[in-house]
View 1 (tube, rainbow, N blue to C red):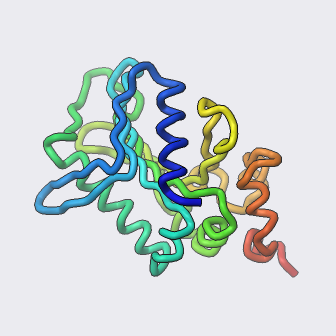
View 2: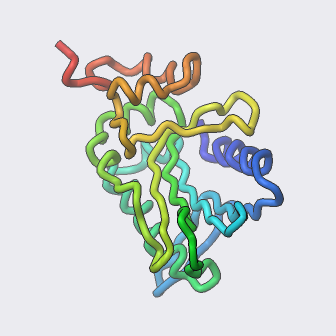
Length: 199
Protein backbone atom coordinates (compact mmCIF):
# COMPACT_ATOMS: atom_id res chain seq x y z
CA UNK A 1 0.00 0.00 0.00
CA UNK A 2 1.45 3.34 -1.07
CA UNK A 3 1.61 6.47 1.03
CA UNK A 4 -0.40 8.49 -1.49
CA UNK A 5 -3.29 6.05 -1.05
CA UNK A 6 -3.06 6.51 2.72
CA UNK A 7 -2.90 10.29 2.32
CA UNK A 8 -6.02 10.27 0.13
CA UNK A 9 -7.95 8.36 2.78
CA UNK A 10 -6.71 10.67 5.55
CA UNK A 11 -7.77 13.76 3.58
CA UNK A 12 -11.18 12.21 2.84
CA UNK A 13 -11.59 11.45 6.55
CA UNK A 14 -10.86 14.96 7.79
CA UNK A 15 -13.09 16.45 5.09
CA UNK A 16 -15.93 14.13 6.14
CA UNK A 17 -15.76 14.70 9.90
CA UNK A 18 -14.71 18.35 10.29
CA UNK A 19 -16.23 21.59 9.08
CA UNK A 20 -13.86 23.42 6.77
CA UNK A 21 -10.55 21.82 7.81
CA UNK A 22 -7.37 23.38 6.47
CA UNK A 23 -5.49 20.48 4.82
CA UNK A 24 -2.06 20.53 3.22
CA UNK A 25 -0.12 17.64 1.72
CA UNK A 26 3.68 17.56 1.72
CA UNK A 27 3.76 20.60 4.02
CA UNK A 28 7.30 21.99 4.32
CA UNK A 29 8.80 23.40 7.49
CA UNK A 30 12.05 25.18 8.22
CA UNK A 31 13.17 25.95 11.75
CA UNK A 32 16.69 26.68 12.93
CA UNK A 33 17.97 25.64 9.53
CA UNK A 34 16.28 22.26 9.86
CA UNK A 35 14.10 21.60 6.84
CA UNK A 36 11.61 18.85 6.41
CA UNK A 37 8.27 17.89 4.93
CA UNK A 38 5.20 16.51 6.68
CA UNK A 39 3.02 14.05 4.75
CA UNK A 40 -0.30 15.55 5.89
CA UNK A 41 -0.94 18.69 7.90
CA UNK A 42 -4.49 19.39 9.05
CA UNK A 43 -5.68 22.37 11.08
CA UNK A 44 -9.15 22.02 12.56
CA UNK A 45 -11.12 24.18 14.95
CA UNK A 46 -12.97 22.17 17.57
CA UNK A 47 -13.72 24.96 18.64
CA UNK A 48 -10.07 25.87 19.36
CA UNK A 49 -7.33 25.34 16.80
CA UNK A 50 -5.86 21.85 16.85
CA UNK A 51 -3.04 20.85 14.49
CA UNK A 52 -2.82 17.26 13.27
CA UNK A 53 0.69 16.60 11.97
CA UNK A 54 0.79 13.21 10.30
CA UNK A 55 3.64 11.07 9.04
CA UNK A 56 2.52 8.11 6.91
CA UNK A 57 4.48 4.92 6.39
CA UNK A 58 3.62 2.39 3.71
CA UNK A 59 5.49 -0.70 2.59
CA UNK A 60 8.08 1.15 0.48
CA UNK A 61 9.07 3.49 3.33
CA UNK A 62 9.39 0.62 5.78
CA UNK A 63 11.52 -1.39 3.33
CA UNK A 64 13.79 1.60 2.64
CA UNK A 65 14.33 2.42 6.31
CA UNK A 66 17.36 0.93 8.02
CA UNK A 67 15.13 0.20 10.99
CA UNK A 68 12.74 1.67 13.53
CA UNK A 69 15.37 4.12 14.77
CA UNK A 70 15.44 5.82 11.37
CA UNK A 71 11.62 6.03 11.23
CA UNK A 72 11.45 7.42 14.76
CA UNK A 73 14.27 9.88 14.10
CA UNK A 74 12.29 11.35 11.19
CA UNK A 75 9.14 11.47 13.32
CA UNK A 76 10.93 13.17 16.24
CA UNK A 77 12.50 15.69 13.89
CA UNK A 78 9.04 16.57 12.58
CA UNK A 79 7.72 16.91 16.13
CA UNK A 80 10.64 19.04 17.29
CA UNK A 81 10.83 21.47 14.39
CA UNK A 82 7.41 21.67 12.72
CA UNK A 83 5.90 24.17 15.17
CA UNK A 84 9.24 25.87 15.75
CA UNK A 85 8.79 27.19 12.20
CA UNK A 86 7.16 30.62 12.63
CA UNK A 87 4.57 29.85 9.95
CA UNK A 88 3.22 26.94 12.07
CA UNK A 89 3.75 28.37 15.57
CA UNK A 90 1.20 27.48 18.25
CA UNK A 91 0.19 29.97 20.90
CA UNK A 92 -0.94 29.00 24.40
CA UNK A 93 -4.57 29.70 25.31
CA UNK A 94 -5.97 30.18 28.76
CA UNK A 95 -8.17 27.32 29.84
CA UNK A 96 -6.98 24.91 27.16
CA UNK A 97 -7.38 21.36 28.45
CA UNK A 98 -7.14 19.38 25.22
CA UNK A 99 -3.99 19.00 23.10
CA UNK A 100 -3.32 21.83 20.68
CA UNK A 101 -1.28 19.52 18.47
CA UNK A 102 -1.55 15.84 17.66
CA UNK A 103 1.53 14.18 16.19
CA UNK A 104 0.73 10.95 14.40
CA UNK A 105 2.96 8.25 12.96
CA UNK A 106 0.58 6.03 11.00
CA UNK A 107 1.44 2.72 9.37
CA UNK A 108 -0.40 1.01 6.56
CA UNK A 109 -2.23 -2.15 7.70
CA UNK A 110 -0.10 -4.47 5.56
CA UNK A 111 1.90 -7.59 6.44
CA UNK A 112 5.16 -5.70 5.76
CA UNK A 113 4.26 -2.91 8.18
CA UNK A 114 2.84 -5.32 10.76
CA UNK A 115 6.07 -7.32 10.69
CA UNK A 116 8.16 -4.14 10.99
CA UNK A 117 6.20 -2.80 13.97
CA UNK A 118 6.05 -6.25 15.62
CA UNK A 119 9.80 -6.70 15.47
CA UNK A 120 10.37 -3.18 16.84
CA UNK A 121 7.43 -3.10 19.24
CA UNK A 122 9.47 -1.95 22.23
CA UNK A 123 10.76 1.12 20.37
CA UNK A 124 7.38 2.16 18.99
CA UNK A 125 5.66 1.35 22.27
CA UNK A 126 8.12 3.56 24.17
CA UNK A 127 6.89 6.75 22.46
CA UNK A 128 5.26 8.73 25.27
CA UNK A 129 1.70 9.72 24.38
CA UNK A 130 1.96 13.03 26.26
CA UNK A 131 3.93 15.88 24.71
CA UNK A 132 4.21 19.67 24.68
CA UNK A 133 4.88 22.33 22.10
CA UNK A 134 6.40 25.00 24.29
CA UNK A 135 3.48 25.76 26.65
CA UNK A 136 0.82 24.01 24.58
CA UNK A 137 -0.18 20.44 25.47
CA UNK A 138 0.21 17.93 22.65
CA UNK A 139 -0.28 14.22 22.06
CA UNK A 140 1.66 11.54 20.20
CA UNK A 141 0.15 8.48 18.56
CA UNK A 142 1.95 5.63 16.81
CA UNK A 143 -0.70 3.48 15.16
CA UNK A 144 -1.99 1.40 12.30
CA UNK A 145 -4.72 2.93 10.14
CA UNK A 146 -7.99 1.00 9.96
CA UNK A 147 -11.21 1.45 8.03
CA UNK A 148 -9.44 2.27 4.78
CA UNK A 149 -12.08 0.53 2.67
CA UNK A 150 -15.23 1.93 4.26
CA UNK A 151 -16.86 5.29 4.78
CA UNK A 152 -14.17 7.99 5.13
CA UNK A 153 -15.75 9.07 8.43
CA UNK A 154 -14.95 5.62 9.84
CA UNK A 155 -11.20 5.83 9.29
CA UNK A 156 -9.58 4.90 12.58
CA UNK A 157 -6.35 3.96 14.29
CA UNK A 158 -5.16 1.14 16.51
CA UNK A 159 -2.41 2.55 18.69
CA UNK A 160 0.79 0.72 19.61
CA UNK A 161 2.05 3.33 22.10
CA UNK A 162 -0.98 3.53 24.35
CA UNK A 163 -2.27 1.31 27.12
CA UNK A 164 -2.42 -1.78 24.89
CA UNK A 165 1.04 -2.83 23.66
CA UNK A 166 1.36 -4.40 20.23
CA UNK A 167 0.39 -8.09 20.30
CA UNK A 168 -1.32 -7.89 23.69
CA UNK A 169 -4.87 -9.28 24.08
CA UNK A 170 -6.20 -5.70 24.44
CA UNK A 171 -4.43 -4.64 21.23
CA UNK A 172 -5.75 -7.64 19.30
CA UNK A 173 -9.26 -7.00 20.63
CA UNK A 174 -9.08 -3.41 19.31
CA UNK A 175 -8.33 -4.64 15.77
CA UNK A 176 -11.61 -4.57 13.79
CA UNK A 177 -12.78 -8.01 12.64
CA UNK A 178 -12.39 -8.53 8.91
CA UNK A 179 -10.19 -5.46 8.50
CA UNK A 180 -7.01 -5.25 6.44
CA UNK A 181 -5.10 -5.04 9.71
CA UNK A 182 -6.72 -8.23 11.05
CA UNK A 183 -5.85 -10.05 7.81
CA UNK A 184 -2.26 -8.76 7.87
CA UNK A 185 -1.78 -9.87 11.47
CA UNK A 186 -3.10 -13.30 10.50
CA UNK A 187 -0.57 -13.50 7.65
CA UNK A 188 2.45 -12.73 9.86
CA UNK A 189 3.93 -15.63 11.84
CA UNK A 190 2.40 -16.13 15.28
CA UNK A 191 5.81 -16.09 16.94
CA UNK A 192 6.40 -12.59 15.54
CA UNK A 193 3.02 -11.29 16.72
CA UNK A 194 3.30 -12.91 20.16
CA UNK A 195 6.87 -14.10 20.73
CA UNK A 196 6.26 -14.97 24.38
CA UNK A 197 3.30 -17.17 23.48
CA UNK A 198 5.19 -19.07 20.78
CA UNK A 199 6.40 -22.55 21.57
